[in-house]
Image 1: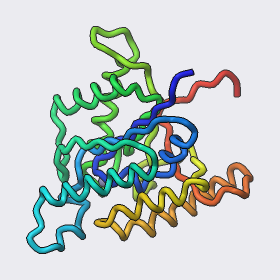
Image 2: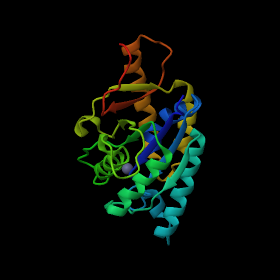
Image 3: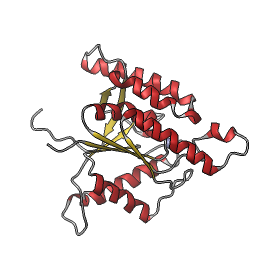
Image 4: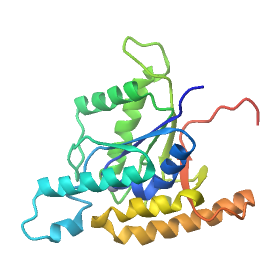
Length: 238
Ligand SMILES: [Zn+2]
């Protein structure tokens, strides 16, 4: 059997925590391997609290954000890697897309997870989506035999953005994260520059838990995370 491998790519170093920490922890608990890539540290646009320190520097903010994200990934059983491409704006060049494609060829993810393609409130999240989509297509040879190294096609999903309706996000998959919610809490608590989001995403998990209960009738589900599938899943039978 093929080892299940999850690759989560965020524009900023904390994005994976709010939107997919539970799914990552569940994936690892089920025997899969998970890798998180942050395209930037969110050092300029998502580290507000850290900049309140007197004499703060960009290098120090990045260092703190790297430590926080590594610890958060550790709580989930995932590895963490940062590309450090700069944020607000995130502007990847040709080589950056190649680097991500090379990483995908090496890691061979069975599932790829990133931001939706639209976000009227964030300049970097859609850029990350495009970069991941391009790298994924380069990796799989865009579905045909190619003159460059490829890896098998992966499932492709996006995680829930901050304001789903405005980002064209319609959930098609709920992951029950009840059993791993404490791990998500611990991961979120590492993100000290964005403490205001911890309560918000804990509530979101409760709301999605309610929706997942409605769909399944399973009263044991307390918390869930929502995802949208971008390519059909293929099954032997319904
Ligand atoms: Zn972000």
